[in-house]
Length: 230
Image (cartoon, rainbow, N blue to C red):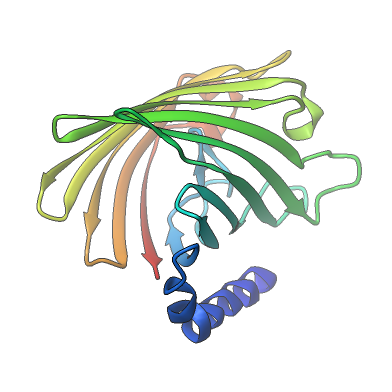
């Protein structure tokens, strides 16, 4: 946690000193985010053993179509692993009414036990489009070697969001995680977001899976979070 806090403070200082100049560049724009939540949920599973989360990241938009970024969060797997760092890059082309997102993600973990093989790579293909006031989309993630070297894995998701009133929106998703050999499950979430202003937003969300027998990190829960972007 100490390492995470130092890295987040460094990101905030970088934004304060250099954010304005970088935002003025038409070719490359940087943004930063910091946040906290009552739990770190990833595809319906708690990554912090049903405890709180602190996270932060930095994103670069490249020439209006490309992107790259880094994101950090505390984790708790009860084996010594204490920090997740994600590195990602991709492109977001627009084809007619459809916004595409084609990218690659690297999930890394610090202080993991020797031989646990927690680091892995995923490839992302997503598309979304407007349907009246709502936005609906579909996403597929594929990993040739998933977390813990458990084999090939694919995650499918249908998602949507819609504004309700000024500053308030609802969103949700239904997903299916397939892992070669074991641990296939379905997951879903539904939540309400509130934009306090252009930089700070809150999210209250219900999460669940259909495999509570895998452990209490798969159980239903309600999570509240806050995120600041600048």
